Structures are given as C-alpha cells and as structure tokens.
Length: 152
Picture 1 (tube, rainbow, N blue to C red):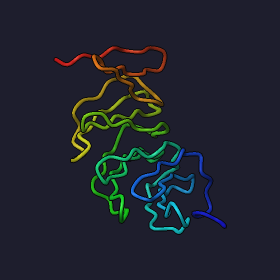
Picture 2: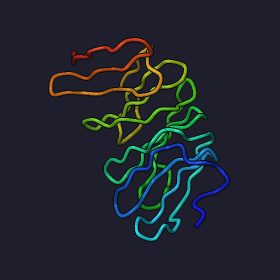
Picture 3: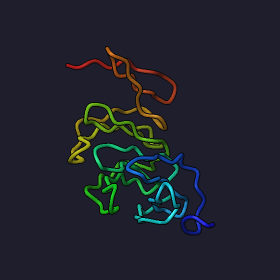
Picture 4: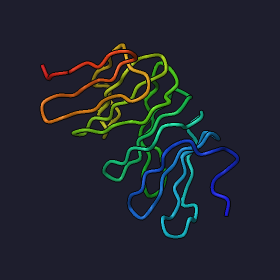
C-alpha cells in the first residue's frame, strides 16, 4: 500500500483521535485512519515538512520549510490560522499550557497562542527543538546554549 503523494516521510507521526498525522517532503501534512491506513485528508504547507505534528485540542500544529506555521483542524485538515516566521521550520513544535513553541533555521524561537496563532514572544536563538520544561522552568534550547526561562 502506498501512503501519501510523491514525497518521503521524515516527520515522526503523531497518533490521536483514531488517526495518524504525518508531514512529508512533498509539502503536505497527511491524516490517515489509524486502523485502515485510508487517507482522510491532506493539506499543503508550501514547503517540506520535516517536523512532527503537535496535537492539541482537536488541532494539528506544524511548521514547514516555507516558514509558515499552521494550525489544522484534526478532523478535516482545514487551516485555522497561519503564522509566518523568519525562516524555514525544520524541528517539531511543543505545546505547553496553551502556548505552542517552535524554532526556525534562522535561529529564532517563537511562542504563539495555540488557539489564535497570536505571537506572545520570540527569542533570537534556537534552531530545531524549541523548548523542554519541568515544574519550575521553561528551558529554551538554543543553537549552542540552553536558557532557563522564568515568568515576569
């Protein structure tokens, strides 16, 4: 069985809502039925998709080499919002407390409201994996440094 279009899957898939979501080098995000492998929808992002989808409240959050970061409806693939970053997005997003974090290959990390796509803040470092957290702190993963972030 062939899944998807003419691209290759480098993105690690995410599974939720009886579906599997995965990005492709053909510039699309795909949704397949988890038990059947049947294509449910595909959505163009405008560029290669290497990062893994983040799943949050019936939304699929993912970036692409086009510099666009998208919120897609998990059931239909319809675009809820789009944010244009300063460069290609290669790494996977992280969602914590309603904020989605991602970084670009131009070494900038972004924090967006996951519901609306509104920019909360950005930081001039980062490249692939944006953040990790523990109970006290958010750690921004920079290009050569790790920053312990605290709320103001």
